[in-house]
Image (cartoon, rainbow, N blue to C red; front, side, top):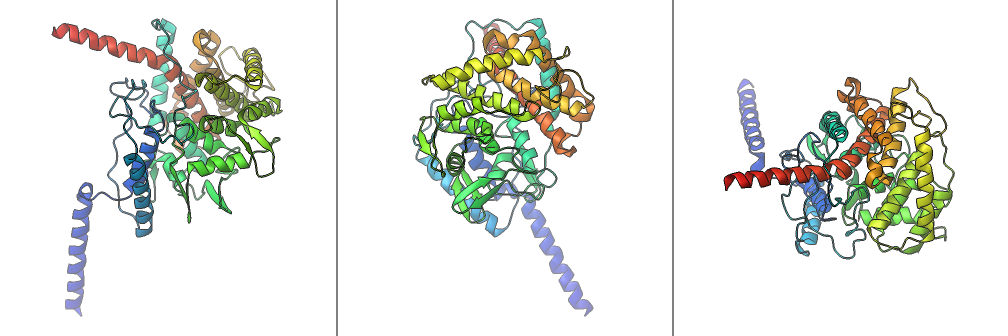
Length: 481
């Protein structure tokens, strides 16, 4: 009996040794789990020539970039088959396309490879990003005040960009908010795969986070859930995918259902109702429906993007809730994107633009002297001891102001005060140290603040980074001669 035990122990020992050796050289045997990362990153890269990559805000354009990829780990046969199919599908799409000539990379991402374009049938593939501001001509140097703000903004964003969210402890809405703030390549730790994976890729592939799933299937339609741990309002996932420039051909998998982001787009189009909160849907559909279609929902109502804009302008939102600021941001996004596409500015869009100008003037009247706003948004003015509520309201309102303002209005001292306030709040140790472990309300507040600062960085600071980098390179070349 003892001999048998020794033999069992010896076999077990050799088995453990072989397994350890295999894992030590995992890079020589790439797992199909890499598919969820590869397919997702390719889907973002090929959607637009100006990919919106997350960056370490403290780094310059020439040294910044996403973290290094982690060596993939093994998973179950079922997951491997599912992911292998995703990679094969993505590879077939990429093989059918030609490389697009690389334009100048945005300031938050170095040129590493030529970005790809989507197929012609992919709506939104050529859509410019409403968050991006074209480089002004000529480009004046940053003022001392803006230079100081740039340094403060990037110092405050650095620890938040480095935070590690996890599918074990964070819900889908928390993970989605983190990705919305820092871009489509944002990664979170997958407890199931024991490695970092693209945040939005995990959601689209139907993986649970914090024991909750964002997507479900109803009949033959994929639906993003609204409620605790999921979307805060209809269309929020689609809006995030649009802001991160995820291709409409990117795969969505929920149980036995296999579709694409295009199916989610169709689902949101069919579920539109005139009395619903459609702010996030306006963002998502404005981006993906670049051909300006007219359609009927499943209730027989006729819809178009101009009608959706008019409905959001007319909709009465609670002035004391985040919904009122999100509505303004969505309208600002839709109008600016329409302008950048040089599409017809119909009466609905013209009316929305005038309405947004009036709202901007009204918002500044509610601003506190330190740049903050009351937690009750447009219903109150003054300070509050609810620091999270103040940051949440200030972040939402700042996002609207940054999205709507252009040119010199981006240097308005009132806006600068608001951004300076947010940067100071994000730098506070209570938020900079351990945001992923905080309650959902705190996480969403910090991520909206981060998004507002990231938007401003891309619109105002990034063009100057590119110019400064070019000037340094020019001086170095002159020295060599």
